[in-house]
Length: 150
Image 1 (spheres, rainbow, N blue to C red):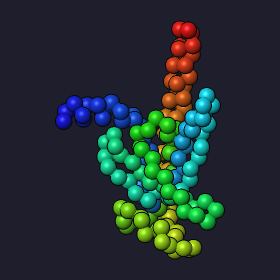
Image 2 (image 1 turned 60 degrees about the vertical axis):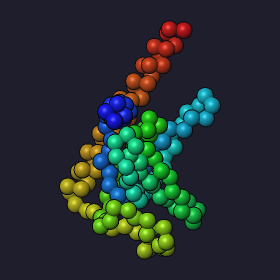
Image 3 (image 1 turned 90 degrees about the vertical axis):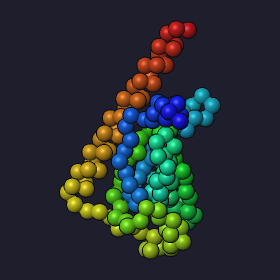
């Protein structure tokens, strides 16, 4: 068991955004198609956060052309560039599966307001931006070093 825990610790990301269930987030996800890479933004509400450690995942739900679309993201995935908090939600449950059946205004989640909340969101978004920039710089440096070896 200690070997498994050691491997999982090595796979964890050093920085993750502190979002909660009910928050509306933008997930910047790297899509690789052949040799080209692009970043796709997936914006929606966080329905649930499951598991712990390296296996931790979160589910994001959005409405796309009148159809509900859900996507499960691993928190420690190297393809996630950053997670940006758009709105902080005020919920009393840990899983918001009941939103699947709601229609119209019932589907809304109350928003947490106040100076402390907006300051926290701004702080988290700045830290996520800095971490994403540092990761991209490390990848670019690694690629240039690999190209120099060839």
